[in-house]
Length: 215
Image 1 (cartoon, helix red, strand yellow):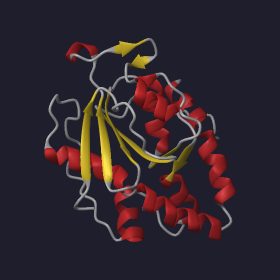
Image 2 (spheres, rainbow, N blue to C red; image 1 turned 90 degrees about the horizontal axis):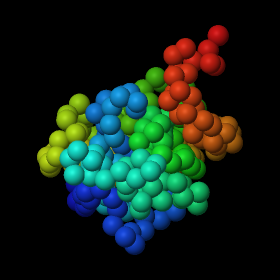
Image 3 (cartoon, rainbow, N blue to C red; image 1 turned 180 degrees about the horizontal axis):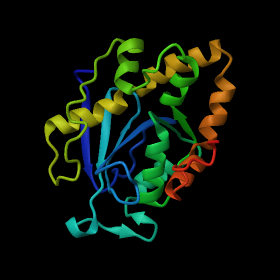
Image 4 (tube, rainbow, N blue to C red; image 1 turned 90 degrees about the vertical axis):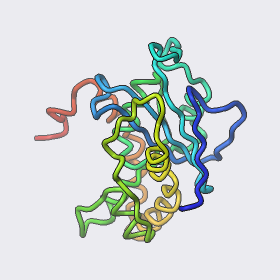
């Protein structure tokens, strides 16, 4: 989406911003352990070609902290709104870091990675870049995947990379939802999505290894 509009917000979403009833969500962090690695950026898109990026600023760098995590009331309200669907890729991680860092329950959820695993059983390639390429004909750059997201000033390349992870999720979900219905697995997918907040809580409590669902 070469003409995408990217809005960067420091600390919180602006008052009065509406992103519709289904909002694409992604996160960037300092690492992959929520209890150790801080949340740096939350990306959102209404699927309209624009992305809103919220930079989460810790207190020591000039940010503020409320009683239940980072002080970003508008962002928290959107993510916790039971009437707004949060569309993610690999929601298990994003829900966990958001619940841990912001002190909120994130639901309802749709996860394109779970959807892909349920219907694309002919392949083990379920990454966002692979799905966008194969289902949408879009190539996503992953060059900034391991960059420093905790920097005070993010580069244009980082912002473009972060935005790309949410700009195409609506179109991707539309394709996958049709495949789920075709293969009669939509109801099963919904059950998996409903379980994701509990799965994320188990991860935060240390039940990811060993997994209580393993033998």
